[in-house]
Length: 485
Ligand code: FRU
Image 1 (cartoon, helix red, strand yellow):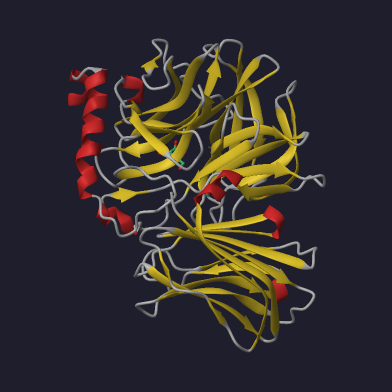
Image 2 (cartoon, rainbow, N blue to C red):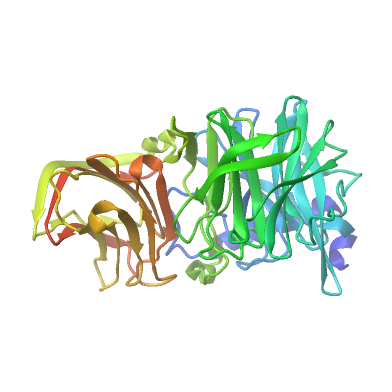
């Protein structure tokens, strides 16, 4: 193809690592995040290969080590024991063979017989025609990976699929390995299912699930797992408006390979939560997503980096079959300076909190609102930029029935109003907000709702104000922490 083929695989990887380490000094600090995982430099998108192996949570990610734009995809690699401190490791996959010459696209990892297996999609483009095939690389030490000589393990898509044929997600059930693959045909997003006894030879089972015609044309990055006695299918659809990760709670019949859904919903209601993947090899169902999106100009690109992971979250299915998404409890270790206040009544006034500098630390706020004593129709928190008129706000409309984030007046980046409908079954309404230098993640309704967005305020210093419109707001308590490592 090009000079790549003349270099040994090891030197291809070294060249990619060198490119990133040389770029680190050029990375602009303005929008760097304080407690989220980010690439050291240049571009990243999807989380890949999330796996617990030899005492560490390993994360891999779609990485372009030569610029802050998407390009020839490599797999970046890092590990952590606690989701607080991350150790960056050498790049683990680079395009090197005919079958992956134009990219090692998204995939997953499993541990089998003590060996770490990465499954990924090899992409090749010849005369404008893209071919996607399924490949494997293995490692004994969790750091150095060797591509399988038998690659590609799956070289063609089945009749129900199309050239969009990627993102293998592998898991084990009753001694058999299963692989879900992203596809779509005739405008209908699909998940295709394969199975294997040995992780090498894969047999096509059939269509695990597909769009009802309104849920997207290609279902990228499928994930399938059992939770609370049911099965959950998560997909990232192309061609659905708005573009949000959706999930289905239902039952996977392993005999027929068909998934029957009880219901489906958006997994997160914000614009910057995509390609979510859960971990293999952990008892808790932990999930990460790419905290950015394809349809937006990312302001940090000019600072030589782009992309991050969301904070890690745990998924739980409650007794009513409702999926809840919670920030990992481990994140409490980030909490430093604490402020709290109780029983604040807002009646035509607002409560200003101390200014907060996001340069060295992030922010977590928990508001407990007493809905019995609240009459206001619209209330929440405005984060005002201390040095300009830019601001963004999080709040509730329709007396707490609708959660929203408004970024229309924020300095740079995407602008809009994003919202989610709440069930609001209790008198207490909790609003939990994680702010970092260029992100916001909101949790409410006992974890039934989350909303994630990048936000790029003009300056580091924000002044939060709690406000209420058209009536009274009874704040039972406010807690606020700085979040730092
Ligand atoms: C999702 C996705 C995947 C693909 C990868 C390429 O964001 O489009 O389907 O494998 O990104 O980087």
